Structure formats: C-alpha cells, structure tokens
Image (cartoon, rainbow, N blue to C red; front, top):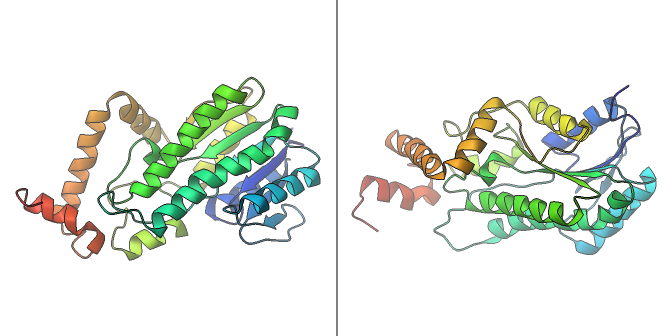
Length: 275
C-alpha cells in the first residue's frame, strides 16, 4: 500500500502540464484528489473546480469547497504558475504584475485559505518553485523574482506553522510546456540556457516529498538541479559567472538578434562603452 493511500490532496493549476500528470499520479498512488484551475473539469477520479486564483474571494470559496468535498486536507500542492519575458531594465508591466500575482500571491492566498484544515490534520504544503528562484536568468526578471519571493514565503510559513504543517519547496528546471510559449514568441527561447527535463521526473519528486516520513525542506528534481542549487547558494559569484558566460555565448552566436526585448543586453555586450 502506498504512503499516499487515502491522503486528501488539493492541487492548483490542475489542468496545466504538471497539474494533469500530478493529479493522475496522486490518484494512481491511492490519494483522493481535487484540483483548482481556471478551467473546470468534471472528472470522476480527479474533479477540477474552476476558479481565478487572482480573485481573493473566489479562491477562498473554492478552497473551502474542495476541503469540504475531501472531508479534510492532508496535502496542498501550489503548482499554478505563469511565465513570460520581462527584462529587469524595463519598467514593470502587465506581464510582470500577472506573474507576481499568480506565482506568488495566488499561492499565498490559497495556502492561507487551506491552512486551518492543514493544521487540523497535520498536513503538508508543497510549493512548486523553479531553479530560477536561486539561479536567475536575464530577460526573465518577473519569473525569477516571483519564484524567489515564493520561496521566501515558504520559509516564513515554515517558521510559523512548521510545528504542525510540513513545508516543502520543489525546484524544477525547464520542462517543455506552454508556459514558455510567450518567451519563445519574443525570441527569447531557453534553448541552450536550460537543459530540459521530463515532466515525469518533476512529478516523481513531488510525490516523493509528499510521501516522505518527514517533509523535506528543499527538493531538486535532478542531480544536475541539486548541483545548481548548491552552487547558487554557496558560490553565488561563480553562478553569476556561469550564467553570464552562457548568455555571452548566445549573443555571440546571434541567438538574441531578433528579440527586441534583448536589444539593450545585446548592445552592451557587443559595444561595452555604450549605455
């Protein structure tokens, strides 16, 4: 019998790339699962309630409805997220605001709504962050900032409720999914910068964290990911040099020439004396 058999789980972003696989894997492991997503889905095994997680009142109502449907809560997986290009040198726009709203604030309000049930049942909350939370990349400031802020929220939450609720952060690298579409359309593909990993590996890491006897604090999804996290945390200057070298290689190859959002970065690399 699986350690997850009978566990009551709530997954946000349940119709996305990670969410669909995760809900199916949790169900296969014997858990009872309800999902939250912008698009509802009437599945007898893993029903998904439709909700805009940027709406505080609707989020609270949907979380409470899911908990009532499950009869309690043992596991919350904050998986919902959005991406998109956002150079740090430009003023924040709607793309930036959306990423902070969905990647950070939606997870915050979902967790706050679910917390009474999690505390009562000594449950767990898992945050799906990103390698970019600790190893940021240029031209994607909003994503890195929102995911780093998500980790900071998880750290604060652990200090407040860790006596009763396990708090884990999972750090995937790049997985092929629609979250990267807007970045690719802007000519800022991550090809050559991040090494893709299969969605199954990310889901397996989340399941291991959920089933562990004690909730792990931080979980990388690959061996390479563990090395990158260690370098980013313990040798940040080295991590910066590695990223700069990779970006310089892409610029030298002309990979960013057709990307208007990268114009400033390309100009400064090729003409160091210009602003």
